[in-house]
Length: 250
Image (tube, rainbow, N blue to C red; front, side, top):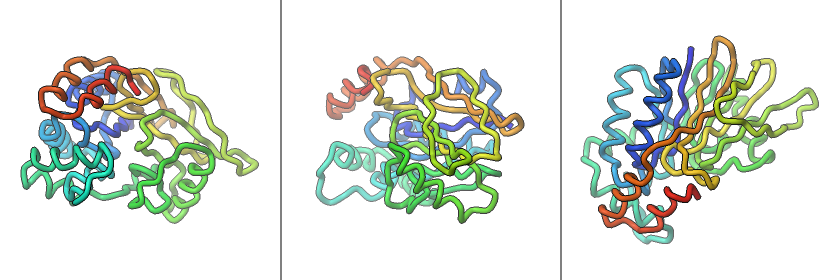
């Protein structure tokens, strides 16, 4: 089965639609959304409704930290993300907020453990930026039977780690569109990047697809109309920094 893995959409409907179209064109049979559907972007309602419809086709959806903030915005704002949480909360309908609130933090799918951040205390939203954090996440996943892969988002970058015969974790830098063999006799951890807010200096959207018949993982970069997404942010009265970030990819 070809499972498309999408994370960190952040209310960017233009990027989401581009990635869905791209994934379907490459044979995606199911979709998994790894959290942060909303936050930062100007179209949270449209993104939530698009993904809710996909659950009727069997899509898996997890909760991210920005989804949690949209449901219960902080009383005192200290970050840009917290400031947009109040705006996002006001845009979403009560049924949409209730749906986001009910989303799980993790989900096992065959040999895959899906999580937004780290499998090590997923509710703490720890970032998996390096081998140490990846090791903690993989070790924590051992409580799930048969799990050989941990797939997440949160860091807005694409990366792949694997545990070799020495039990030391090694990092692999994936290339867009190139299938990577990921045999289940090893343990693997991947971060699939951000659909709606890339931060590696490249504005192209990100997602990944895993083929569980061949055990191959392919990371993708997808062009989309980031100028339109940025314009929507400005029209909504959200901070201009968020629009600039889409154009710079950082």
